[in-house]
Length: 132
Image 1 (cartoon, helix red, strand yellow):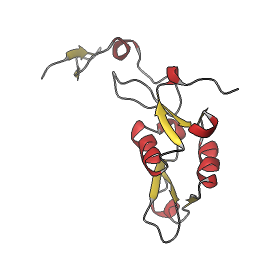
Image 2: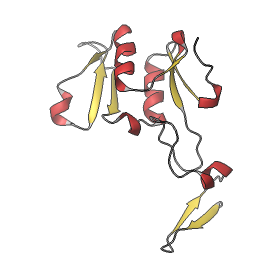
Image 3: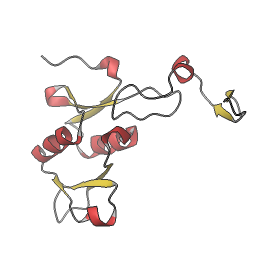
Image 4: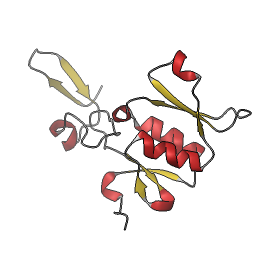
């Protein structure tokens, strides 16, 4: 195993396989909704037509609603920690997201992008132009 081993105060080691400067400096993600692994760059979900960074479930639900997605309320009883959206009653397409937007990971963002290709992108926050 190659990489860098870090030891915490208690002597517990962890391996950072592809170390970057950020992986040593940053302990918590700086942007809500961009939970990342150590060494990974934070990402944001962008609604492409408006070039707008999605920052909450309310914004995401509004944009998904415009694209024909509706909130799946039956799932709340079975999985209270998830919010789910479905395209229609006859469709197998389902998007499952953590209820807490701060726990939204890149994996969840790419799930949204794959199911709405021309409307959403996952980007590095530095590459997002401010909307005017």
